[in-house]
Image (cartoon, rainbow, N blue to C red; front, side, top):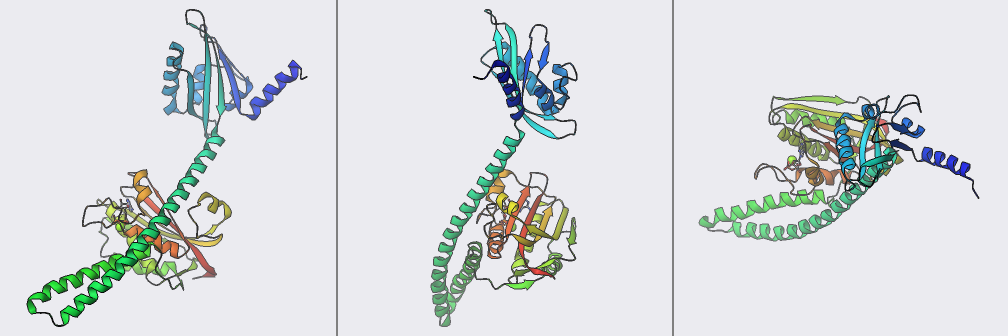
Amino acid sequence: MVDKEYQAEWIVRAQKIAHLGIWDQDPVSNKLWWSDETFKIIGLEPQSVAPSFELFLQSVHPDDRNDIIRQTDLSLKSDDNPYNIEYRIILPDESERIIHEEALIERDAKGSPTKITGIIQDITERRRAEEALQLKEEQLRRSQKMESVGILAGGIAHEFNNLLYIISGTAELLLLDARPEDQENLEGIFGATQRGADLVKKLLAFSRKSDYNLYVTSLNAEIRKVMSMLDRVIPRMIDVELDLAENLLSIKSDIGQIEQIVMNLCLNARDAMPEGGMLYIKTENGVIDESFLDKHPGAKSLKTGSCVIMSIADTGCGMDKKTMENIFDPFFTTKDIGKGTGLGLSVIYGIIEGHDGYVLCESEPGSGTTFNIYFPAAEDVQA
Ligand code: ADP
Ligand code: MG
């Protein structure tokens, strides 16, 4: 048998382990009692000051204070509104914690509150772990979706390509001895097959059906090459800032593919900044470790080891979450007809996968967009 005293000690220890504080309030005199753990959770020395609602509110995140007051009022009025809330507190060292709080209100026969007992629990760690898991699952789902869309797009592109061969071949044959009045129509057909072939090329790039010939390349040199071409298409009100690491490791890439990535990302950044802004292009060496791979289950081709990171960031319109979920899908565009094809990022996605790399996008509406691209380093030599 465990005696009462030992049980009491147990409860104290259990509260400590669970970061669980208890409080009591007399609703008539408003007098409050806090357990040691309650003090600790809101960042105070146990029993160092007289507990008060005001003192408690001071530690709550300013944006959450009204919610607590409203919920307290509602719960006191009726049992239909049980006190069960979540809010943030700011500790003296300015760190933010997530708190879950529940209370039980005892009432007399007339329904007036006679005693309120509450528990307050720091659930920061649990919440962060849940969020990390959710993020991981979302990434995994997205990468599986891209995989199946890739197979579909690749299959269609392949069949479509065979048809195009027949159409363009036949048009070419007919052109050889066409009557002058048919010439223009046949050339129209032939021209359309060329545009079709271009589309097929992009879909194949997305579905990673293209074959790559990888050579040791300097990413910085590729970026500089693109920048000289971009002069013409980036308007003056956009300032471009290059921050290319001097000791950047080499990567292995196919000729022209890096150019495509940089070009497409810069053009998207331009489109996101019709009124001008900043375009940052940065390269640096990095390391992919187990924890990175664990956090990013979508990075299937990436392996641990040295990598080269290219970041392309803009101060443009940014994107909401819903848009961000679809940006790599083929034909997804938010631009007007004729302005966007929705293939730019799909092609980038395919190329990066084909280089055993990984692309991450961060964006907020109104706060710009950053694309981080991870390439495995070719070897531990400097370019
Ligand atoms: P397109 O440029 O033809 O629309 P993309 O595949 O290049 O196709 O991009 C798909 C969509 O992703 C864009 O229509 C836009 O909504 C969004 N997007 C891409 N880059 C950015 C960016 N830098 N800022 C804001 N939105 C972007
Ligand atoms: Mg684009």
